[in-house]
Amino acid sequence: MLENKVKEIFADMVVLKDPQRSECFSNLSMPSYMRDWLVMKFSDEDGSVDYDSVRRYIKKYIPGKDDFEQYKFQMINGEEVQFLARVRVNVDIKTGKTRFELPDFGGARGGAAGIVANDVADEWQATLLHESENWGIITLEWLLEGTASRPRGVISMIDYKPFCPYFIDMDFFREARKEFNIHEWIDVILMAIDYNPDGYVDEKGQISEEKKLCFLRRLLPFVEKRVNLIELAPKGTGKSYVFEKISKRGWLISGGTVSRASLIYDNAKKTGGLLTRFDYVGFDEVQSITFEQPGQIQQALKHYMEFGEIKGFDAALTAEAGVIVLGNINAEKFDINKNMVEHISEVFGESATLDRFHGFIPGWEIPRMTTGMIAHGWAINTEYFAEVMHELRSDLSYASIVEELISYNSNSDKRDIMAIKRLCTAFLKLLFPHVQSADDISREDFEHYCLNPALEMRGVIKKQLCIIDPKEFDVPGKRTIPEVIYSR
Image 1 (cartoon, rainbow, N blue to C red):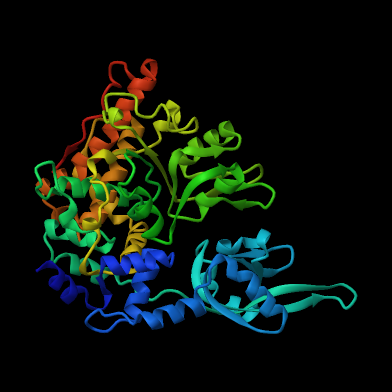
Image 2: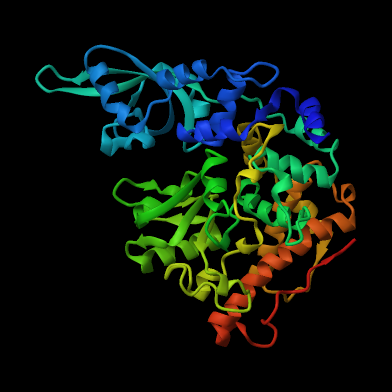
C-alpha cells in the first residue's frame, strides 16, 4: 500500500491527512503548510490530533488581523507580546537601524512595523536578511526613543525564533525518490499537496494519469525560477488553492487594483514590489483585476519576463518570481484553436507580452474539485514538500541535464527554445528529482513526462499568438514551435 511505503520511507516528514480535519483548519483560515505543522505538533503516532491544544496554540500564537490593535494596547501598557507572523526586514541606511514590518497586519502603513533590536538582528541576520520575507515567532515591546523634549514611541522586536520546523536534506529526498516508480511518485506528490489521486478520473470513470499530470503542471513555478504560465479553466478546479495555500513563498492577487509600485518597484520607497519577494506571483480571476497605468505595468512586465530584471526610475534589481495568470473561461472557449486570451486582460493579452509566457495549462482537462478529491491518509506533509520544491529552484544541475538530452536547429526561435528548456527542467525537478546525470533517466520517461508536455504547453502559446497577431506569427517558419528532439 502506497501510504505505508510513504510513512516508512519519509518517517518524520509524514502526516495523517483527513478531509474533516482540512475543513476544520480551513475554517480557522489556516493554510495547508501551517495546518500540517500544527497537526504534527499536536498529534500522536496514530495521527489523532489534540484539537484543544491546537486551539490554545492558535489563540496564543496565531493572531487574526484584527488582534494587532489589542497587541499595540498591551505593549503601550508595558507588556511584551509574542506570536507567529510573517516578517519583512530591511536595513535603513540613513539611520543605521534594522527595521521590520508585518505585512499581514498592514505593514508600516498600518502601524505594524518597528525596529529590530541589535542583538536579534546580529543573531539572525543570515535568516532575516537572506530572504525577502520569513516566518517566525516574534516577541515585541514598545519603547520610547528620541529626546526628552521630542520622545517618539516605537515597536521593537526583542526576540525571534524562525518558523523552520524541518531540516531540508536534499540528498535524503533524492534517495527517497528512488524508492518509488514514476506512477507512485505522481500520487505521492498529489497527496503531499492535499489531493486524492483516485479523484482524477476520465469520462469513462477510469483513473487518468494524464489528468493528474495536467494538474501537476501548476507546480512548475514552485520548482523552477521565472516560469511564466497562463491557465484558463472553469470555476471550481482548484486554481486558487494550489497557488495560495500550498506554499508560503508565493503570492496570489485576487481582485482589486494593482499598481506598478506594489507589483514591480516603488520609486518613493526605493523598494522592490511583489515580484522581488516571492517565488511566484499569481493573478487570480485576472478579468476582475484592475491595473493602474496598465501601459506602464505592461512594459515593465515585458522587460522583467524577458530578462528577470526589475527597473525603477533610479535602480535595477534582479528577481526570480514566475508570473502566473489564472482566468475563468466558458465552455464554448475550450478550444486551443480559438482566441482564448482576448478577454483575460489588456496587460497580458497583447502578443509581445503573451510571447513571454512559457506555457499554457488547459484547466478544463482538470476535474472539478469535489470532496472525493481531498487527500485522505498518510502523506508527506505540505510544509516540508513546499520547502523541498523551493530548494529545487536553486539547483542548476537539472538544466544542464536537459541541455544534454535535447537538440534543436541553430536557427530556432530563441523564446521558444528558452520556454521549452525551462519547462523541461521544471518537469525533471518535480517528477525525477533523483536524476543526477543524463544517464539516470530513460528516453521514454524523459520524452513522455518532460519533453512532450513542454512542447505541448509552449505550442498552445504559439497557436494563440498566430490567432491574435497573424501578421507577426502566422507566417512560414513561425507557424509552429521548433523541432526539439531527444538527442542521445
